[in-house]
Length: 90
Figure 1 (cartoon, rainbow, N blue to C red):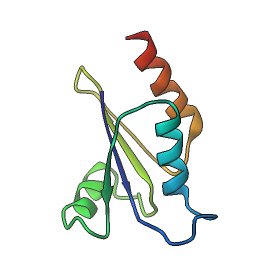
Figure 2: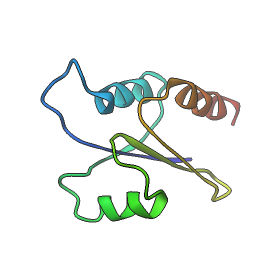
Figure 3: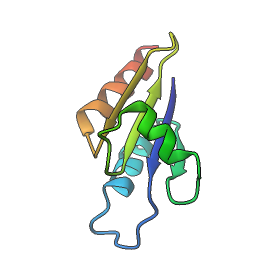
Figure 4: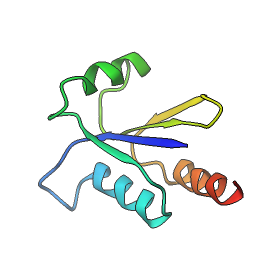
């Protein structure tokens, strides 16, 4: 599986769902690519193509081995936990 985390580099470490999502992915040993939406000019269009209602970071995009896409916005531990379980089962 390929995981991309679209987020922002934020100065306030106490209120940063992007940082929290990164940490939770790392805690589970899940490899991911971080895409800074402020630095990557194509990132905002890629997000809009996924779901035009996404307006807040982070956005997590998972491409599964079978090509199926899974994506969500926000810090969502149960979804990350499920990815970790899938990785362990593989």
